[in-house]
Image (cartoon, rainbow, N blue to C red; front, side, top):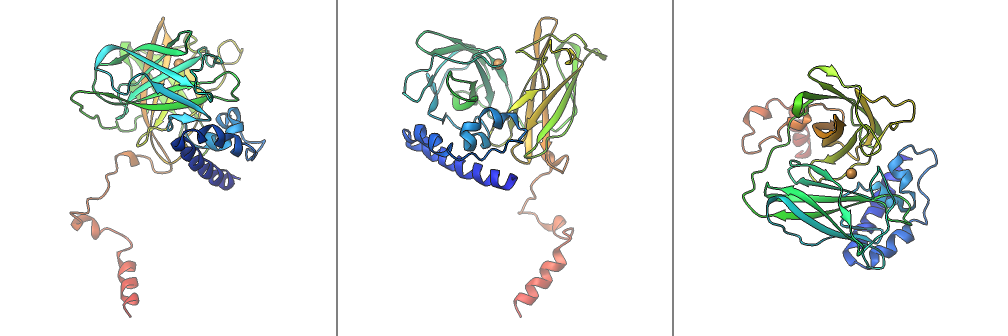
Length: 335
Ligand SMILES: [Cu+2]
């Protein structure tokens, strides 16, 4: 089942990319591919369920494309000057080429805008305002120059399932890239808050992650609802900034979901590798963000394992366990 899904997703993903490349084809491709019902009924990945009609696109992680299913994220400008309150303006163009004005509310908002510098620093999650013509606008803190990825997470009216479109935004100036922090279970947050992460990302599977909030060492049990949940988690893949679908387990007022200290999510990592997680939670009227680096896959700590330097093979060559085999094979090959 998984193999079929993966192959299907890969193929359809290529089609979707091709469709986006030729422009007009983007509106046609998903319709054609959606005729193939490749999503099994017992599939538990909610992200796939909510995007079932575009199975191929749903298998491809979100945020990698500026155009999908005929919808396009168009920034008002690809470059904006650095500043703390830069007015960011953009439109979502629909299959007819006109700005979309109708949206379905998801997580309390019609559209969620995520901005992050391409080194996975300077994360922001904001909620733009839509005008009558279909132009969204919101001030964004772009005081740190660099290349940014901007994501629009939304559901157009009449579209079955959500979309996450991504576009690049350049902020000219002196760019000093920040290395991805090493994986750590505890994130320090401002104002005495600490968030502890429990759980593992398993490639290709929905994985349970629980984030536990404390303040000055004491569990926080009166988290406030934020975006129809006790926390909002965004996960991005290091390397290409793919945007993962993450869903909270339960919601405020359902009678079973506690207001902390633990907040549980289900996230699906599309591959092994490093991910950066950003948890927004609200307490005492203020939204704060906790950030984590998490490695998906069997080898913990691989995030910091350097790629061997081929220019200096001396110390590592002798330590390779298969050196003898290679020598034997080479001898045999040469007769
Ligand atoms: Cu949001």
